[in-house]
Length: 290
Image (cartoon, rainbow, N blue to C red; front, side, top):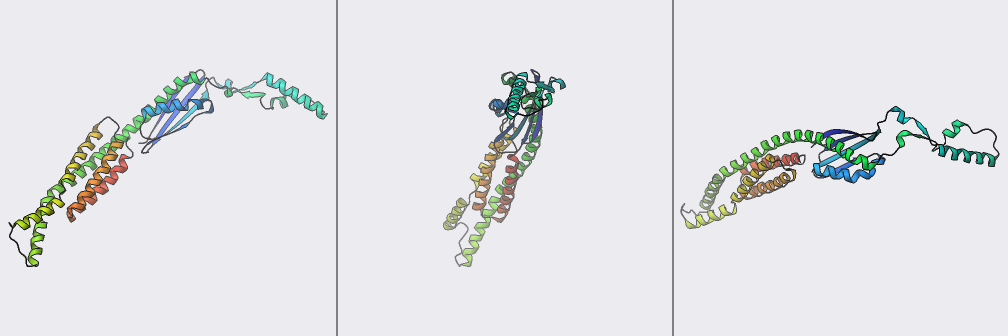
């Protein structure tokens, strides 16, 4: 399911912003983008996400800003680095016998002499609990969006399960007519061959019984009805249902395929084809459901 959320926190002069976004995936994939000073916190942040999310590609971006104000971004002179750089430049000037004076501008432009206040590194141990709080806030807001989308998916899945139930009921009603057709067809073939048999002939009864047993789809229909009940229970449950529904969809596809092969009836085959197409749509939707 898709969703987005943002969380903010402030601690020790640092402003933390966490943005979370999710897209559909069968499994759980976490992509974290952290500023370099917070890179060591990635494993702990992953633990927080894994406890809250079970499915989807989760993109998390953390921004770290100095919250002390504009003055904190002004240049800060490293006096020790400046003295060391000046001495090195003077020694180089003397060694190469170069004329002129070493200016303050040249000194300040030397690497390491002038640094930015934002280059200070935060204390990760101090920021971790605050960052986790901001992450949970972002995840909570993302989950709200995911639940709204999930509610629409559940409504759609209930409609599709109802269509499958209607197909299974129609197939069950059709079974007696299929058996009558086979009996009449067998009698007609025997008459064409000059071997007419009375309706109560034991040989005819045995053959019809064998045909009925070979094409019996009662078990498949019973299992389908059980799967329909389990699907509804999973959709109504507050627990994660995506993987369960995906498994049930596979099983229902197998049952419809089997009964279609056993029944050998055009009307039933048409219902089976429609049901298998509906199951393909269900599996596409279930892949988006956690």
